[in-house]
Amino acid sequence: MSAIRTVGVVGTGVIGASWTGLFLANGLRVVVSDPASGSEKKLNKYLQNIWPDLKKIGLKSGASLDNYQFVGTSLKDHYSKVDFIQENAPEKIEIKTSLLAEIDAATRPDIVIASSSSGLPSSKFIGKCTNNPGRILIGHPFNPPHLMPLVEIVPNPKTEKSSVETAVQFYKSLNKRPVVLHQEVPGFAANRLQAALCSEAYSLVSRGIISAEDLDACVTNSLGPRWALTGPLLANAMGGGGGTDGFRHLLEHLGPATEVWLKDMQDHAFEFNKESLDALSTSVGEELKGKDVQFLEAERDRLLVEILRLEK
Image (cartoon, rainbow, N blue to C red; front, side, top):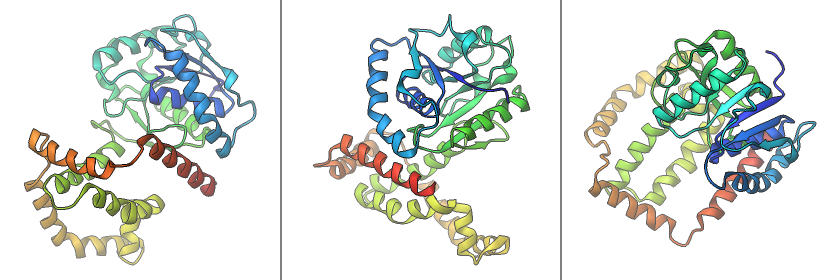
């Protein structure tokens, strides 16, 4: 991997701004663009707010909030300066198709172009890329990227192996935990897992089986802490007594019951209609009564910082 010293960030919404903070904390120079009105001021305020958390985690040599340059609506005059692109445009095929064509045409052909797309495979929006589409892939973070370690790297059928390797090594250098999907699927891996769990959560709450508050407690007081340490598959292996044999034993033991549960889930799958959404929203509203969401977000990030410090 050639040295990556300057990163181009396209789009400074929540994800792009968070990426920018992470890159700066790792001593990189960042060139940033966004066409939305007021983006520069919002980015500056966001970076000032998250910098204390990044300091707690640990800044690398050369890290500074002065190392970024907001260049306006496009990186058009600055593409030649960047060594890596992190694109964060809205999840719309027509927007990404046009934008990726512009980036591909203007950057050096060896520069990896990573899209933060949260579920749209890159093969859907590289149709107009003619310079070197082999360096385009998905680099999907979990929110907020400056704290959450995971990055899903999803190559499309045209992506070169060397580009995947470059992305893996680059994200590792930022203390991220990259995972590589072997083929494209809509939603990738982590969001599909999240969608499956949330769908059943929505169903249980909207049907009146459990309140939103107690549903969240089911996750934060059981699955969440356990899976944070092992993940579901290792947890299964441990639950079965350890090793591959233990894993298989648990699945064989629980399989018949699980099939019954899954059949019932399918029969009562959540439907995004008015009645179900009203019931679900009402219960979530009860859980939110008297709570300040901004405070909850700040507390979440504070605890995430402490967890990451402990892991180090």
